[in-house]
Amino acid sequence: MTVDNPIDVLLVTGMSGAGRSTATRALEDLGWFVVDNIPPRMIPDIVAYSTQRTDHPKVAIVADVRGGEVFAELQDELRKLKSAGHDVRVLFLEAGDESLVRRYESSRRPHPLQRNDHLLSAVARERVLLGELRADSDLVIDTSAMNVHELRRRIEEAFGDDEHVTLRATVLSFGFKYGIPVDADLVADMRFLPNPYWDPALRELTGLDEAVNDSVVMLPEAQAFLEQYTNLVSLIEDGYIREGKRFVTIAIGCTGGKHRSVAMSENLAARLVKNGVEVRVVHRDLGRE
Image 1 (cartoon, rainbow, N blue to C red):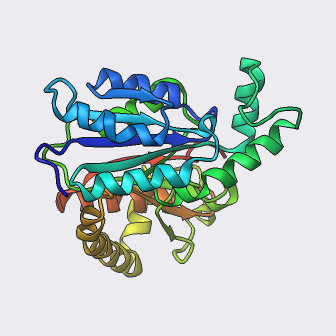
Image 2 (tube, rainbow, N blue to C red):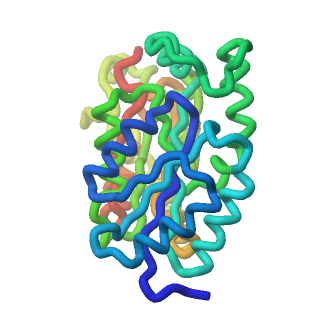
């Protein structure tokens, strides 16, 4: 049965220590009505209450392992809300083990699953518990290298006024030598292109410099990739929107994340913008060498 006044419902979940508090404060500042750590069976009541109020057009529900092993029940309630016509999305906040351990050690707070065990064991158990939710998430944000201000800006970009936005894309360049981004939806490998690193005149430059950009992008195979990959994103865009997935992270990699991936990311982003996609570009590993 569909409701007369459907609203936006956002589930905020993820790893403990990955930034839920920062994310929820940012959502509150954007006008979302935030409810933290409630039993899943109470979610329909909160949503029904909000549909009757003009000041609660968007509801964010925070759920994590503090609620125990109730995630199957939680997903059932979300499916019911979708069937009723509400716009339901899931935000998952991720971080690497090293970052999570460092944050817990600096805060001197115990992990909710730690008990008398090691912190890393608790983190590993939490990843298992949240695995299915992470797989079903609309947006995964890896906060490992983010400070609170960067995370807040990311939340504002994703969940501010999006009345006229269809698909929002993050095009992220990276170096394979530093690892594949864990929050990537699509990964493309630019190591099929000649590496400017071996040209002494280009080695110290980056993909943001015109000389490197031209040496990479003017290649026929680079042009073919950009055209076909832009078409690929256009192909999946309608399906993503239809399935309620409004955010996509496209990771473009090369060996060190300095030359090819940077240049190709900038050019892919420019093409996507021309197609009406709202794009932000992030060069994760630029400057690490």
